[in-house]
Length: 328
Image 1 (cartoon, rainbow, N blue to C red):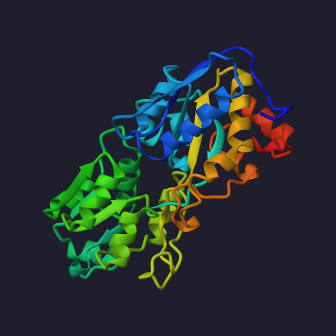
Image 2: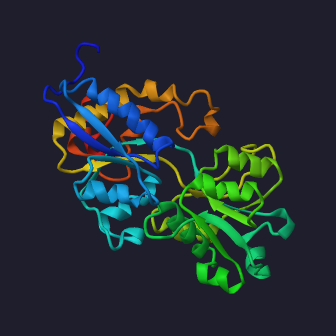
């Protein structure tokens, strides 16, 4: 450990909430736990807990004080948690504060079997086919499933409408299970994020699906809820020769409670930023546009979180010259 690094002399036991156990949030939590414990008291330890549902329980547990830190995506949805809107209407989390945002370039996309001969939402609404669409569960715990249905409703196709056509959603908790259904041809369409994953490559470059462009009016209405647009660029898949409008589903947000001790939040933030090279190395075997964690991590961008920074995090960014007071 280099001299001049921040330290906490007292020993700490922290509880992090990651993902289901084998995805990116657990990997990030594992890296952060070592960096923190290397600089805290000799009996310091970190437990990394998994989720069973769709992820909202991680926010609940930090808000309720059962856990100290969690990671969630998409970052743009989380301001609604502070005010109890959208999926958070029955479970507001006003005490959540951010340490950093970690970049991830992702989108929520609808892709349909080419045999349907549908290439736009307008054609989909006109033909009204009895589609089986694989997507995430909408069970009150799944942020992916919630955003997926918001996107479809913004295009005039809520779940009741889809069911009235004789179709419906085939829902799962884990994105890779959902994507696998389309890879194997079990469904007629895929409504999902994680677009950098090998499954999406298989689907799009293997001619198993046609990407349906998001409509401008739908993106505008979703923008009023805090969502942004993130077009899929031409060449993203070898089969894609033009840009496709899409709904953004980007960035990992690292969250704690507002009453976390200031020095702990400061040290965690220091580790996230100053030791970022160690987590970047775990993704550099992937091409930048195929990595679920975008690299390189840019410190000034890590400070631009969608919810207010914890005071300890704000102190780190300010001392590092990465934050203007007016920013937060």
